[in-house]
Length: 152
Image (cartoon, rainbow, N blue to C red; front, side, top):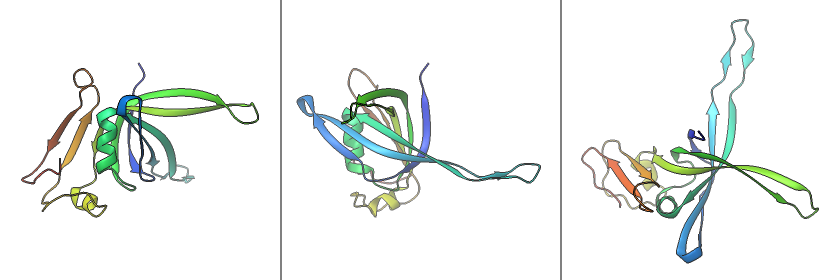
């Protein structure tokens, strides 16, 4: 089984491109952090941040294009994809990506509206779940809210 679950912060605004027949593809970087701690013998283990390259397709990418910005907290569920290419010197270069199947936007809407997302009066907390595998090529967007309008 190839399954990855990440919770982290978006490192920069997502890059979205449209390829073959208008299919959206989004690329973003996600930083996940493990907190530092102290071992029983007193040794300090520092905080550690890992950066992940995340690829999102179709409707998932379109949602990212409109609602995800640098600094937003996301939950990403997907699979690891390994690939390689030959650089200009002919040397083989390897890279790892996370191909997302599901995404939850964990940043409260008040913070998102500061990035320019059209959200009317927002009270309480909410999050959205986007699933790229709902039906045949369809994307399901489920939103849990507490008495607040949805921007989409």
